[in-house]
Length: 372
Image 1 (tube, rainbow, N blue to C red):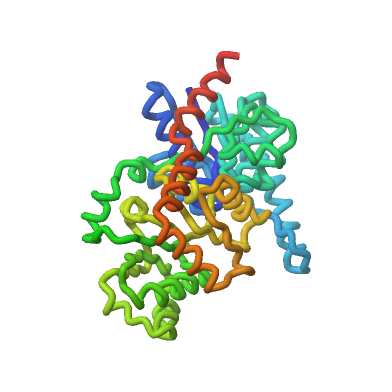
Image 2: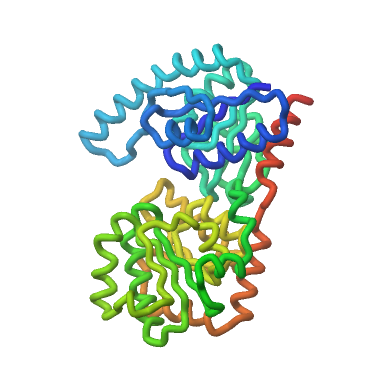
């Protein structure tokens, strides 16, 4: 069996494809797997690092904001899209896949369309509660549409949709809180984990600084914070402006980047972060109550819709950046800190949303395509 995966843009699109590919490789003897995507995107590095052959397709996305510069860019994007159709057919004819699986990003559009026209089985995986424009366009043509959450169905045209969740890294599931805290040399007090991505979100850093200024007064809360590469330039000043000397509080674990996220997640009682699809899947898998601050700078405001799924199910509190209020944040955190029953309820509700066998579900449904 030959499978071509198409993914691009962000790690949130690429990592699910890699996780699914790994499951196929582990459970199918004679499987051949290749990937396709843009030569300049993250996919080219992540895929080759994972040991798979990568087929580049030159293409770029369209800009929706109207400006003279974007008109020129969109004209070039249209030209590249039509040109990519020939490259896509070339890849498909050479590799001859039995199925093409796309996991999002504009890079997947051309190959999945050409595969559909050539009679090759196709599937797409949508990680978010609000599907991206590419997957909304492709849904009617795909043989299977894999969804992370039930709510995404409402935003799609009629299609063969199956809810399978998002793939979870194995390492995230394999650590207990006791093990994690021993690794971090952390005591048994309440622990907050906050982060805003590898670059570092200004608002998340501001929120973390306000929170640390509050609990630094009584020094009973452990706090792990990933300030990000850009945050390294401003976060120390944020703390200084709030009269916090981090070196004098051994319960503060402040880092440029959290490389051992699996350990930090296991150690945490409460998580404060953005609401990217894969992050939320890990919060659910580890049963972590959370305060979610959706990024307002993403397509279709999809992080807000992701976060509302958890809030509507009693697993998280959502605070939009435009509504941020320091006193309200502290009030919410204090309620989790002081009320163990509330913490437990939110934890249990998060666990109810978890889907821990995503890759197996995708595998079984894909294999069933060839029995019909």
